[in-house]
Image (tube, rainbow, N blue to C red; front, side, top):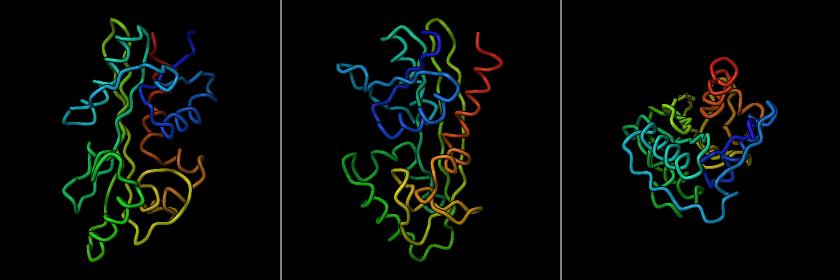
Length: 197
């Protein structure tokens, strides 16, 4: 199907965000959750681009179709850019984000530099074509406390400086307008509109 997009992830939260952004454009979004026996792909790159490429190209090769992969994470200036590409696995892959968030808040208690950013790199891989990348960044600050019930991951402690809300306090529409993934997806949409061959 021409308007079908496969997202190389098993993360239900990411799938939900992609559906919210791409389905209104007429795309049917599928993910690796739709392929029961799909093997896990080891993300062993050093950058967001490396990991996005690994997932997209491997999945495209195995399925023989166009695939989008997302690698994203949080960079905290006071932590020298960590957790970075290890954001999902930082403090252990099975460690709840409520605990990870509290560790960050505790370590940042007396830290004056609260600057951070979410980074998202999308890789679009197609059989026999060069992989294309789209990058979005969302500048945030580490909040003083966790707030909000929406979003996922580090969202309850990441504060949008313009609205004064954490990303977890925002509606889906508000978050998509400023988020790293929203920015990268808008670049992807523009590419689909003007340059896809």
